[in-house]
Length: 95
Image (tube, rainbow, N blue to C red; front, side, top):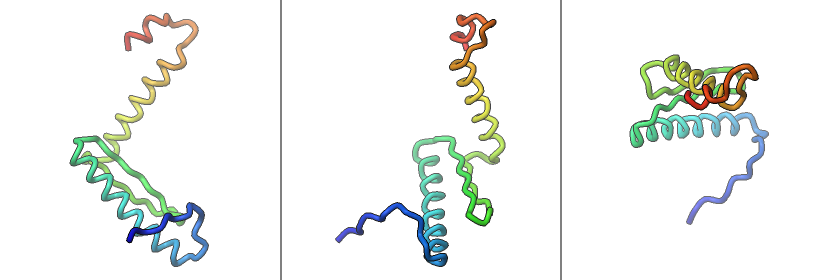
């Protein structure tokens, strides 16, 4: 017999909410690790609790390396989507 579907709404009971957060956080970190190993993917995960405590996972040796990669990628994407008016559109396609 399977489990029932969980209604997606805030858990009002503080203790239950904290237990659920801890269990799901552990599961999420485990899944991030699994996808990085199985698919040879570069994975980073950042989670802040409601009290501001940081939990992180990175498949690389340091989170900064992955964040730099993300920043370079997102900057290049923005440049392709919003070309400057004085820059030739042909230049953007060559990126």
